[in-house]
Image (cartoon, rainbow, N blue to C red; front, side, top):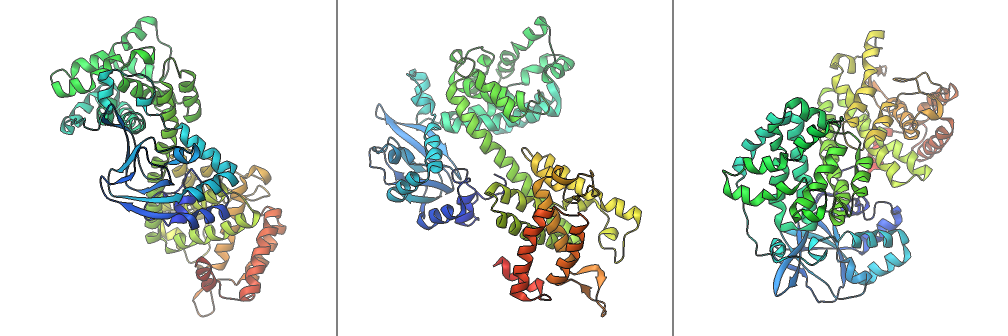
Length: 555
C-alpha cells in the first residue's frame, strides 16, 4: 500500500479501496462493497461474536484491536490479536459452520461489517475476492492449533497469563548492542524485536512482550567478539570454521549477561536455543524470533542485503526444518504489514516536507496537486489499474519535493533564470527521487519522479532518456506538469496590469500542440490529453477560468 489509507480518518471508500483484501478490485465493485458495509462500534471487552454461534457476518477492523480466543479444557486461550485493516469472521461463512472462536474488543473498536448474504454474493461473483478470502483463511496460523503441546507451552496461550517486564532497563542494555556492532546492530535488533512481536500476535500473543525484549537483546552476546569479526559476519563474508564456531555461542553469552536480572533472565532465557539447527529443538518463542532474525539478516542493507524477495525465498527454503512453517507464514503476512507501516510513516514525512516547501514557495504545493489531478484524468481515461492510479497520485504529489534544496531566490525569480540558476533548478528532479529511493519498495515510483522532466526526443533531464525508455507514468506526468505550468498564474509571466498571468485552456493546448510536434511528449498519450482538454473547452469555453474549474472538478 502506498498511502496512509488504513486509518480511522479516511473515508470508508478509500479505506476499503486501499485495503489489501480489496486492492485489486475494480472501482465499481469497491463502490458496491461500500454500499453494503455497515459500521459498528464496540467497547473494551465487548464480544463481537462467540464460539459455537452461527456466523452471520465478515468484519474488517477500522479502528482499534480485537482478540481471538477459544475454550480449551475449560480455560480461555488466546489464539491471535488483530489490528487496523485486518479482516476476520470469514471461516464460518466460507465453510458454513459455527464460529470456532470468540472475538472480543481489546480496545475501543470500530468495525466495517458485511453480512452473510452480501458476502456470499460477492465471493461467488468475484473469483479474485473469493481467492483473497481463502488466502486469509490460510493465514490463521496460531501455534496453539499446530500440534499437541505440552502443559508448559499451553500456559503461554492462557488469557489469564500475567507477565510484565521493566522497560526502564531496556535502553541501557541496548548500549551493549552499540558496543558490539555499532548503530547498525542497534537498528537491526529494534527492527527484529518489532517484527517478531507482530508475528507473535498471530502465533502466540501472550508472549509478545518477551519476544520484543528478546529481539532487542538477542545480539548483545556479540560484545564478546572482535568488532572486525562481527562486521565481516554481518556482510556475509566467508568465515573460517573456527570463526563460525565463535558465533554459535553468542546467544548463550547474551543469556548469561542477563543473569543479574532474575525476571528478565527467566523471561527470555529461550534465547540460548536460538542457534539450534532445527525449529523442533527450540522453544516456541525462539521459533518465532529465529524466523524474524534470519529474514532481516538476509534482507537488511547493513547485513547481507539480499532484498525482500530473495530474503523471503531463503526463509521459505528452510520451512519445515530450520523454521516453523507457521512462523514463516506469519512472517510473509507481516512483511507486507511491516513494510506498509514504514512506507506510511515515511510518506507522511515527505508530505510534511511538501507542506514546508509551500511555506518557501507557495506555487509548488498547488502545482503538485494540479499535476496530480490532470495526470489522474489521463490515467483514468486510459483505463489503467488502481496501482497505476496510486503511483500517479503519490508521484505527482512528491515530484517537486527536491525543490526544498533550491534557494528561494531561484524558485521565485520574476524573470528568466540564468544558465547557472537553471542548472541548479534542474537538480530538483533527481533530488525528489532520492527521497523515494530511501523508502522500501519505492524504487519504481522513484524512477517515475526522477524522469518527469525527460522529453520524448531525449533532450530532457536529468538522464536524457528518450521514447519508451522513459517510464510510462513519467510520460503522463510530463504532460500534466507542462499543463499546470501554463494554466497557473506565475511570477515570471505577467498581464499588462502587472498581475500574474495564466493561459486559458485553448491557448495552453495550442502551445503544447507545438511542443508535441517537436517531440516533447509521447504522441499517443498527448492525443488522450487532447481529448480531455477539448472536453474542458467544451464545458467552460476556450478562454474559461481554469482556476474556478479546477476547484469545481475536485468536488
